[in-house]
Amino acid sequence: MKRLPIYVTLLLLALSASAADSTEVLLAKAWPAAKIANMEELGTGIGIVFTPDLSVKDNCRFFESLGFACFESADWLEILSGIHAYNIDHPGRRIRTLILETHGTNGNGLKVQTGKKPEDDRSYISVAALQEMVEPVGVRYIIISACNSGRLLRPEIYRKLNPDNGDKLFLPATRGILDATDAFDAKRTTVTVITPATSHIETTLVGSLRELAPETRAALEAAAKKRNLELPKQFAVSEMLIQMLLRDPQLQLRTGAHVEELSKVQTTPETSERIFKAFVEHLGTLATRNATAAANAVAAR
Image (cartoon, rainbow, N blue to C red; front, side):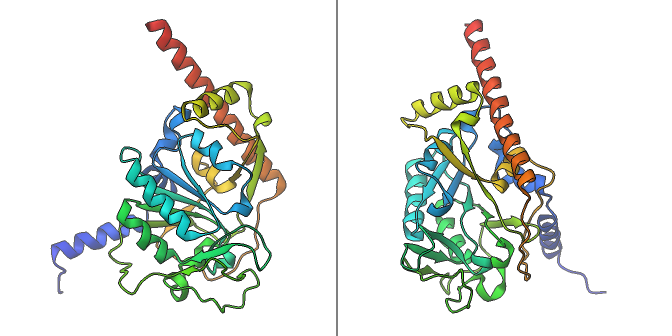
């Protein structure tokens, strides 16, 4: 029997282990700060990209208070410019992981837009193009929280989108389409793409600061003040982002695989409410823990 060279064998074993990484392992690599107790640093190393029509006024201020870098625009070039500038200006807090709170366009392209009218500001990017453009500044993981995100990795549109796909959600690209260049080598990229294990419709929830516990609001206000921010009255967050933060066992993620089928599966209102309440309770726990730690530090001094 012909034996593989040892370095090839080790490479195949490494690839197999990577492909088999559990959701817990993937999140431990991509979002380790989610496990820390300090609420102000919850988003350390994480950038969130919002499409404006799935957001609320000044939504980024809420996440920036928690330590995230946040970008909201209907123009992918503007978003990419912001990511590059952030990592250059914050060498000690560089974005290693991007969470995309965008549209999946039924799996036909990552879309950001201001609205659903044909003339609204709107742009698209392929997954490979996004990998290619964020790799030089140190981004190592892209987590796609978008409807039917697994379909975005289909070989026929992974590198270059099809603007004539016939999907009614693929509205005019008034701000352009970004595809990967011919030089991009998917086998050599250091950027790992993470998607849900199954296709479904991703739900974005809108909450109010008034729904948070008094100690949570106080902690958020203190964190915002340190960063010279004024908190918004509302915030928008996807169920998937909450589940990642909470390490919800119901959430299953994977890498290196695409999905063909288009799914209309969506969580029930009851499930959405349960997920949101868990998010509120988690922030409250962190706020209480932070306040206790601060009080103990003062007492020790």
